[in-house]
Image (cartoon, rainbow, N blue to C red; front, side, top):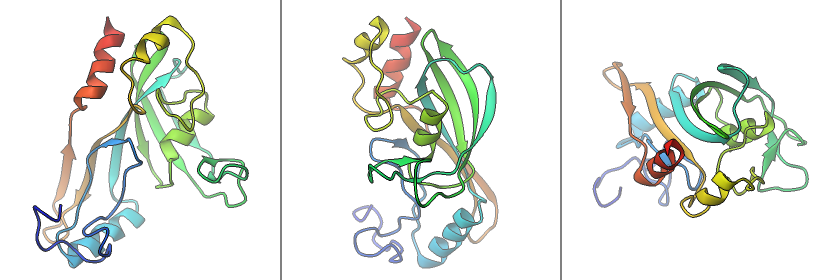
Length: 196
């Protein structure tokens, strides 16, 4: 970013110029980066006011019994494991995730998830709490047993969570903008494997 954009917003500090929000390590997908401080403040306000809509794709274990739903479970830092989020916390905060079932593959499902709040590891935690943890998630998934899963071990390099799209209002023109990005090749390979 520093190489391509010489005048990024300095609000994020010297180590995070232009960064308005973040993605978990190993999560691929789309991000907003502010090129100036005015845009940065405006976009930050949109995030805190829940005006920015984000949609993720997650490949999860199992098949949900419903085609869509809303997960409203407060989460915070786990009491025993500080690197993990859970509902077993002394500092629970509101967390809401809406989801839709997009496709099923025997033992797995492709889920479209939209967080209405922005908690750390929110989608990963919520899907795990309802019994459908994300494939390849080393923190929230313990399963790997079936023949299909054993075959997947060879091609799964990270958790299957991808920030597919986001929409926001342009900081100056106020025009609504929606951006999306395709699944990267490493995740697309997994879908193709499951289709076979």
